[in-house]
Length: 243
Image 1 (cartoon, rainbow, N blue to C red):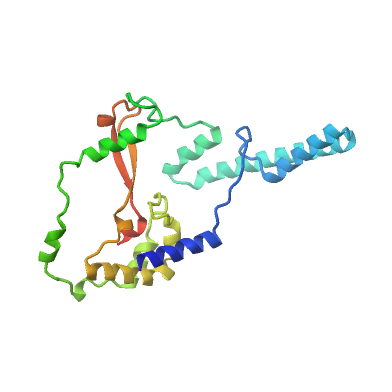
Image 2: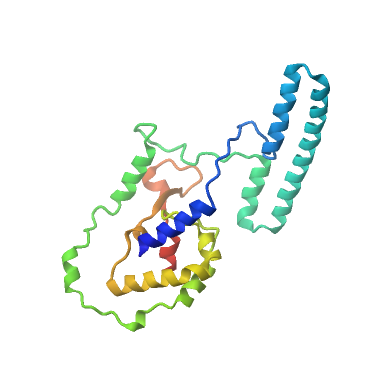
């Protein structure tokens, strides 16, 4: 049921919301558009071909378009600052001012290969719980079947939870964005409720809902020690949190 759900949702996302790949130059201004880039190319071709009349005409149009695009870009960005919450205000301001974000892990005291700090961080995070014994599957047969209708989840409950999802949170390893679950809550609640009830009834948690993407977050502005200055933040599948 879980495989069918994810296959259907992700396939529809790929069909109706395909990923668009856009090539941008590192020197491009943030307001540059593909049409403006084409005008610049046409202007340069006219100059190289010696067609000065066409070159001057395209030069004027390019300058006029640049002024308009620049003005519209900054006006729209400033307007967004008036309506966004405090959490996004500073990140949007830094983008407008073109303040580059620095690498927060650049000062780590790491003695290994320079291209493998992620492995060292991962090994430390794993070592924290390495002393804990794994769950013995043999104890499962001793558990009594305590399922009853009290644990049945109504689709309306699922829809209400989906409608309250905080879409500012990053999506987990399942690849389904939180905004999609919220916006399509009336269409997904029946299927998810069926999966949730089957999971409770059978005492089985799908592996995808037990997975997480772990991000090392600094405890201090300039962390130096992997052991003391970093702590793991887990990005969980949004459906698992709804469950």
